[in-house]
Image (cartoon, rainbow, N blue to C red; front, side, top):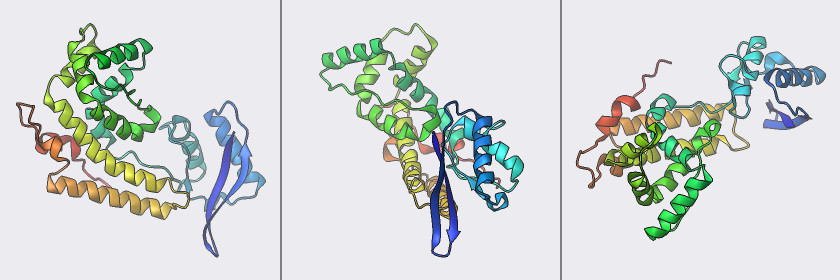
Length: 260
């Protein structure tokens, strides 16, 4: 079951209301679209006045080829996506891959127990690493913060472990030099700005106009970081790393040409 809500301009300003709760246990793309269209038709809503469509960031709603948004856009060509655009995703995926593997690695109960035993051995309090959800990629900030808090014991765990698989080899390489720690601080700094914008977008009274200004403000902040060549003091220098990693090393993948 999911709610069908509308947000519209009225004489008193921006208003919103719950039209109907739709019962759809399968939640297939075509069924969701048909249910939405049925509600629009039943309540005699003018489809030409529909300016944007907002929903959870999942493939069923926003997939590239066959999604609810694409089906609606076939009917309403001027329709906009009322969701958070994945800014910098092409850049982030380059750095996130080994971090993502590290977080996924501990989904095994046996591996969690091994880390618990290792934490006791090195006399460090054990905390589960927070898992990153692929369809909720902005949750990665908290995962990185937890990984930074427990970086040393996790690092020692991987360095002491035998590398019998390609993933284990990748993780050992990531933790074997200071560049990995620099990348984590770099991501934490950038994702923190994105996370603040995300919280603003989650407000119940945020309009599509607000979305534009929130997004532009975020872009300007990231461009300012790029212009100042500063992302985080810990990402610029790690005293335990023999090779000095600077933001200039990360700049080629951070810079993204704005073609719009």
